[in-house]
Image 1 (spheres, one colour):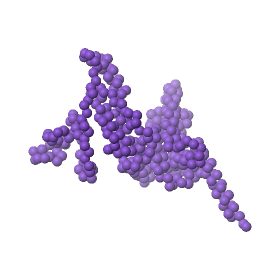
Image 2 (cartoon, helix red, strand yellow):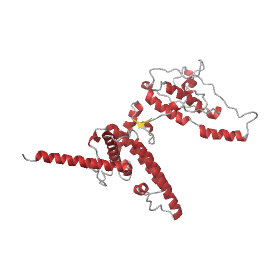
Image 3 (cartoon, rainbow, N blue to C red):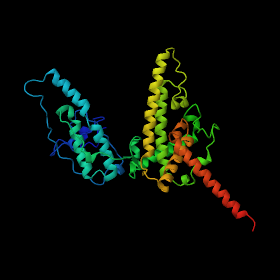
Image 4 (cartoon, rainbow, N blue to C red):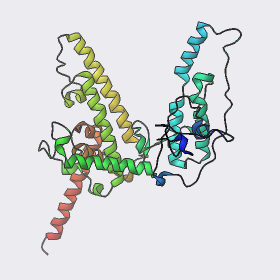
Amino acid sequence: NAVNPPNENLKMLRNVVVFPQQGMRPHASEMAFGDLDGDMFSVYYDRRLVPLRMAKPMDLLVPKRTSPGNGPAQLKDVQDFFVDFLVSSSIGPISNAHAVKADECGVQSSQCERLAELAARAVDFPKTGEIVRLAEDLRPKKYPDFMEKVDKPMYMSKKAIGIMYRDVIREANEFARQNPGELSAAGGRTPVERGEVEMDPLLIMPEMKRDRALKVQADALCIQWNGEMAALLSQFGVDSESQLFSGAVLQFHRSNLAMDREIAQKATLSVDLLRKRFRECFEMGLDRNNSFEYRMNRRRKASAWYIAAYSLPAPSFKSFAWLVVDELCNVRQYMKNLHARGHALQSVQRKPE
């Protein structure tokens, strides 16, 4: 029925929202500059979702319309406008920047207000032709984890959406472990659970059980890697993760060898670019110096990646761990030395007087 109709005569209306005719400004315009030309609205009956404080709506913007020049528009003007639209559309970057600033500073911050105005102007670009630029000081330097910008610096969001995002990941992983038959032909179990491989204890740093933040970040990145690898396997028709990751693709099930070689080159290039992106993700947040703490942070992070690759339920690609094979070698050497010192200490303590 109509949402909260003010009188009985409107109760016959179905699947509509009734707005008043009186007032200084339409409610649709106050909410998001809506002009009722196909706008969609969401209706919530749960009063817990109603904001405690109503914010003042943004002032109406006067569109800055551009003109193609003197005389009627020509075909070239249409072509130029279309190219400008493709090249200059900034609504995506502005919306992403708003999500970041809202997480960092709150939606009532001056940065968010500026970005909201830019977004309102950018969305009208097809109507006005006004090119909206994102100011440099509004460009995000790092992104909250729920945005899953794996090729950018990330941080753990402390806002509700970040908490819910990590809860969803944790619940999904828990569901996968408890319901192995629901996920894949592999049974939804991890490679370790299926007995295919044993985790090397020398690649697990002792403090990893306590570092939940590092584990959450590694799990999120591993899930991203799994999705990217699954897409590449499907795109190029490769059967084996090891072939795709190593670049030694043996068979595409095609009769055209020249085409096979070309596809193999494209597959290898795609994996190399993906590998580079995720390696950059690994380096983010690590201060570059040669201190002991810096080296330990690298080892902890590499160990977290190894644990994620071998503990997340199938389909999980173990190649995620070996994106940082050099650091895993350092982890293993460090753990061997640590165990050797521990055994030597025990021998000294047990030596008779």
